[in-house]
Length: 566
Ligand SMILES: Cc1ncc(C[n+]2csc(CCOP(=O)(O)OP(=O)(O)O)c2C)c(N)n1
Ligand SMILES: [Mg+2]
Image (cartoon, rainbow, N blue to C red; front, side, top):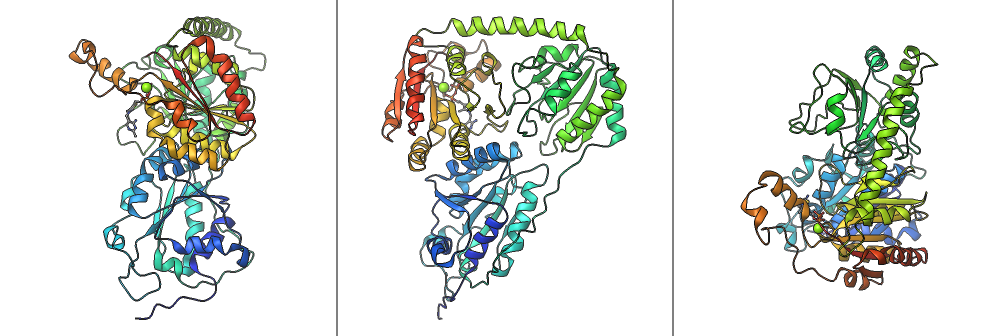
């Protein structure tokens, strides 16, 4: 059979131009032997003049997906990721699990092994094309993506890309997946100039006004209200939440927050753990929190009323979840808060300032600040405490600093006063998130200083060589701080929690927790041209941080390995 190579433009070019038209500016790309047509399309772009996303070479799929996650957190825009067929997609799955957990839209693409064994342009040409074929490649990601499809005909390119974009960006947002068979990508396709996207994501308005009124009745009369936030809607400032919470003096806990709801110096931001305060509350407003408290540790008071806000207040993607809800306010989070604020204003007299409540929480906040200062102040020996290191990092932050944390810092001793100054691991907890998302965030805004704060275990999960290579290649002045405690401490803690008096608790070395021997982390980063130092003693840390920042200001990535206790 003859292989007929089409003349003129081809489907890969149609896919890429439609991506760009739909608003995808960046394509994190890991090489696939199954999408030569994508590579050819980029290579002849100067000839064709077609508008396409910028392709960035990322040497590991997990890094590529993590970067797309961080890029979205900074910009509110989805990025594209393209990887190799089944094995490449397999390496992407964990990142997609993290993205779905945080409702982060990502346009995920992979090749698909050639369908035909012979006879077509693009037919199988290597043993891997048999070895990598799957019965249901998309099945590997279907549990975590909102939508998946396989491109079949070149003329579908526009509608498929626009449908993917519509679904990824519809609330609640999330990743979508499209597989691209090698023959389909190579088929001839006509490309119109001046393409326009027809993507129309669904957005939600405020929740049902009758339910908003009921919620306002409860909250306006509450003696001990409590707000619990976890993954609030991304906003360029802290509004409308900050004003709403301030006007009605609603004490707010950011329980296991993955994003900031309030600046930490907001008078009503009263901590990061709901366990104690929940028991006293009579009305609890849960805002975008899949896990507002731990049911085995605490419970709402008898008769307390629970109001839940968000695009899906039931968090239907979690199979078992039985937090009580008296009023479910399903809708756009911030629009519903605006509606609730307006309904509250009708019920609360203008002169009501809730002065008693404010005084009570001001005292609690002052006591917390004192305790945090004490905790952070005593750990500056060798090894340092995570609290001390956290405070030193806090001291070098300004309004253009972003911390992306994964089992490093203790946020309770830090202040995050500015929007986008703090992001943390999704509840899915797929390790490797910290450094990879930080790279994406740094790429999205080169004017900021992004700091990845990661455990020694987390650092290794991130494919650090691929991360440092990416930072060098893309000239990303990321500062990575590795908290070296020589252990998977979270695993140790979890064992102690269940078996406080067990054999593991008294073992010299607890099984399956030690990271021994530790590599020379600073040398790993140094091998990539990073400014890299190991810091053994607390007294040396502030100056080391300054040196690291001087290096990043010069455009170089930096890494500090800090020796910490556990
Ligand atoms: C991909 C993945 N593998 C394994 C785990 C299980 N796990 C959770 S925390 C943890 C240890 C993390 O160690 P480190 O980053 O050093 O932080 P530390 O616990 O020492 O503070 C592990 C292995 C996970 N969450 N994700
Ligand atoms: Mg560790």
